[in-house]
Length: 84
Image (spheres, rainbow, N blue to C red):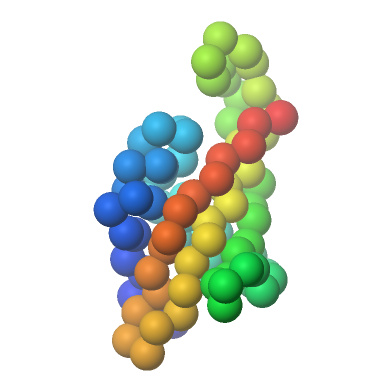
């Protein structure tokens, strides 16, 4: 698999939304990809969480990166994170 690089925006969003760079890379490497808007790709992976996020307890965290495949690397545009 090609190297995975996070854009500046994606780096900012993982901190703000509670994901890690390792979770984003693992999601891209192991979850099935789906076409997204504007020629991009997306995928989702659930991770065991079992702790508080913003004052509420959640058992699962879902990491949802949006990325593009370039000739020599994968570039993550943004990352969404859902808790349930």
